[in-house]
Length: 156
Image 1 (cartoon, rainbow, N blue to C red):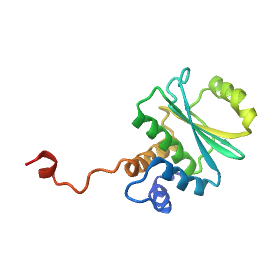
Image 2 (cartoon, rainbow, N blue to C red; image 1 turned 30 degrees about the vertical axis):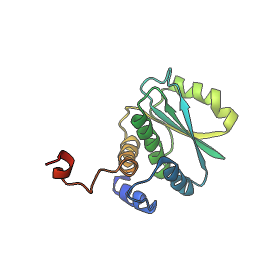
Image 3 (cartoon, helix red, strand yellow; image 1 turned 90 degrees about the horizontal axis):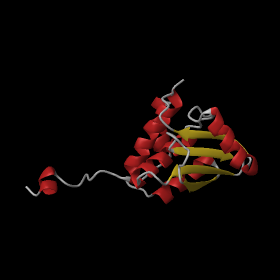
């Protein structure tokens, strides 16, 4: 069953102010998640269309994001992974078998990886839900200018 109707309640449960920075947003998600989150920049070489990745371990969650992407896109990829965490998604359908195996062999065994989810262009229900929640989180990171009228913005 889809959690699309639940996304607004997830946002409300975080009790976010109208505007928030990434550090404060992470702290709120960590409180729900029950573990620390570590943002981990990676080059993205060999990632293909995968732009972000959440690796869940017993003690900590890692969010990997590509440094080759523009900063706003990096933040959106991070928000997408936060969406997976907040919606309690499990399993990964974005990585192909070879990529998942390579990732697991390189960091999974060393860090006790429990599960992983990746952001790419796959369009299953979990990805749509995480993307929808990412946009709502991004609105808090980059709120629109609401105090200005069109006359003030354009100097009319």
